View (cartoon, helix red, strand yellow):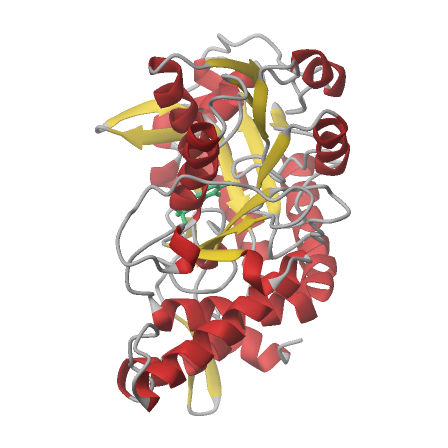
Length: 418
Ligand SMILES: *Cc1c(COP(=O)(O)O)cnc(C)c1O
């Protein structure tokens, strides 16, 4: 585990100057479902890749190429170890968006003669849902499982959705907005009993929960480095090679890198950093989870004890240890971020094409637009401190009571509690 001095050092707003720790006028970073800062140990591994080991990992004729390749293979081993796979089953990509597209569209193309039906869930990441929608436009049938108010799909509904035409089921391990954890092992077994391939987007779980592709019967699994203290632009897709051997049509053709599944010169620095992040996760995620869960629970208690009309979005029992997602009633959601400037958090509105629209995840759980807009997501991380949590409680309580006094919002929403 990082010594607490190092935890403080790499908290983005705490500076060590001479003898004292000083807090910068920077918000407290609590948005780690969007991205995390790089762990200092990751940066140490990456920097030499830009000037010493800068070779092209595909260059076979000199030491620069061999050194780069050695770093890539070491990283491949560490990523494989993180998920219980074999290094030969790891395909490096640019991140989880690409991995999800490659898994869904690549499998669909390679298996379209078996059948043309796919299954996923309403709360998946847009890179899975939009891949499904693209396939629907070219004639595929899809089942998009609904979720209940706690964010869970019904496992019986999954079973009933499977038929002889079903080629692939894609379900995430943990949700990026609510942190709700899916029963992936059960889903994996249901699929394998029927000879159906199972893809799991484990992007959010990788830094916190155990992953074992054998035990969980996962055939394809997506990861990204930048949600586990690695750099942006590096990710991986695990592709099972034995029982069954999964076939994939690549999205990107070219020099045949990554066993032909993903051509293009490898992002060696990013991959080396990803490998180090994976190595650290294997060693430290159990400790990180335990420590951060306590902080998260204190955050939840502190806010909920001090506020009326505030509810937790999603099941608190099966949830990532670093996530808290709160619905705040009687608050003008648009004004909320402006009153919480000391905190870097996300709201329940996603901004695409300039227009904020309510989160599809919260809507799928039955929240109305109003309550989705006035929801906030806290994402804690390895470098979160006790002081961060005290400030976060204070700021949130103050912001909500100020807003409720200033702008006593009528309560238009129905109580969404289950
Ligand atoms: C962030 C995220 C992605 C996309 O990953 P990128 O590497 O940013 O493309 C996919 N799935 C989940 C669950 C995520 O949280």
